[in-house]
Image (cartoon, rainbow, N blue to C red; front, side, top):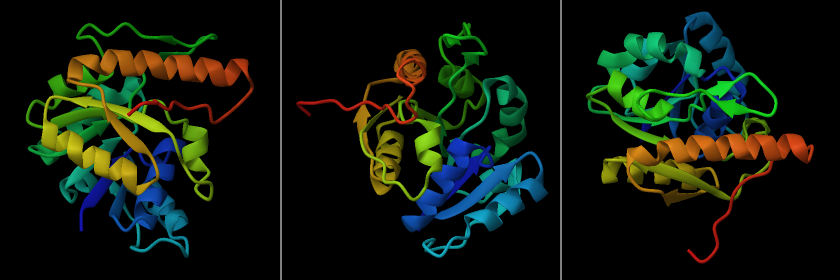
Length: 215
């Protein structure tokens, strides 16, 4: 059984992914800067439908105990959080969901010197296998854990096996993963996330997503 750590798992996206993955049979550890906050979130995640109990821990031990790590963290905290978990994620698949948003309306991206938040994560975690993904599924929908997910999620990365592992996770919670290429494509995924956020604001929706036809 694969163990998944959700670093930053007390927010809407992270918590929703944690519960959905636990319901799908994965062993899940919710990570937070504060262990007690992670433990409280894990207790909330212990719903009757969860197959395997959800654990909570500080980010570093959560990552150390996992086979695969999902980052659901704000870009502003990226450097500090990834420095903390760097040794714990060596050789592991790390899924970066970060959208480096500027807090303006309409939403805009921060300019990232290396090209994208995911590429910045790879630079900070040189021995990890970073895959960017889950940018186009709204956190509000993911957090409504009793509602099914559908649609596509684009993933990109330089390690085919790592992308395969992430595609398996996506499929387990009702999403179809579409391989968008190497990690240099992460900037496109992050821009697409901003577009989806803007569409949700413009049309006063919370669950606009993406689906590709012909695949």
